[in-house]
Length: 338
Image 1 (cartoon, rainbow, N blue to C red):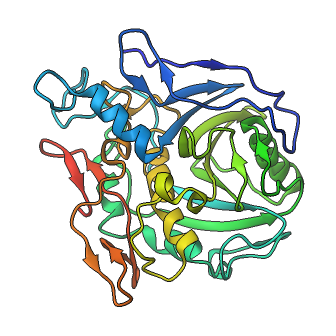
Image 2 (cartoon, rainbow, N blue to C red; image 1 turned 30 degrees about the horizontal axis):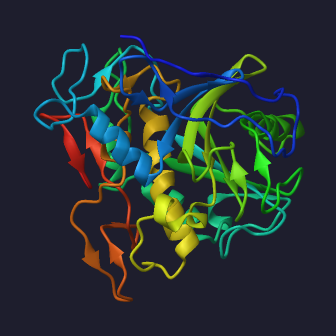
Image 3 (spheres, rainbow, N blue to C red; image 1 turned 180 degrees about the vertical axis):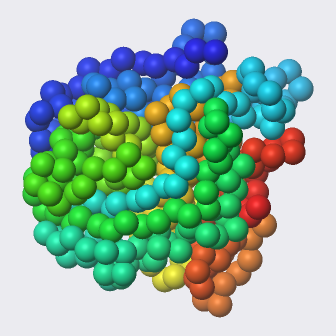
């Protein structure tokens, strides 16, 4: 099976900073096929999480003559998602890169600091610190590589780098190449340590268009690029509550923090996919959908929190509204726990 990519012209990858005419990662279209969510930009391949409107449009395109979503391709399972030979990340680590001139999320790190998970007092930091070991994250343990090594339920938050260097401000657009350059600058300065099992999650502040298509084509994306011969896995996490109708499904804020409560939903989506398809050649279905795509913007059973907000899971001791994930067991399906 072949995955399709649209070639996009982007600014040189050695150029840091912001631009208003950077390339826009958009959904690629192959003739005679549904829109896939993989694009090629510069030296990297990325996979986007579509906005709610775009996700529903893709679902409708993928429906067959009986109104049911299309099935998977080759493989030995019948769960609706298939392995294509690429690597997984058996034990995923996450480093948060808060790229802004001021604190992005309440209680979070101040610019130009590095620290451990325990020093990140934001709700995003709390979610990252408690996601591993949860029954929700356990869904990813149903995925494995060619040696039958399964994903472990031990995602760990390895720490953060908050930086104002070349930080974009509200109203600016940042190319994907500039995001990669910023990550590379962290490696070069020692603020970041390269690790093959780490996903470097870049968070932007309010009003910043990270990648060029935020809010119009996608809410977040993940991918990989080469740095000094190393395969770097990264996720791009724009400030999703800038587009509450397209990149948030909140009905009230379970933790009285709308920006962070909206962000953890897309963050979970990207980490699940980076875990099971880090180089975009492992787990996906016939439509090109990765595990979280198959359940994008689907929340299952919900409940009302003490402050009147809607939630569907507890991570640690806090309530969140987080999309379901696709379980690769039985006949497959969207679940909140496994």
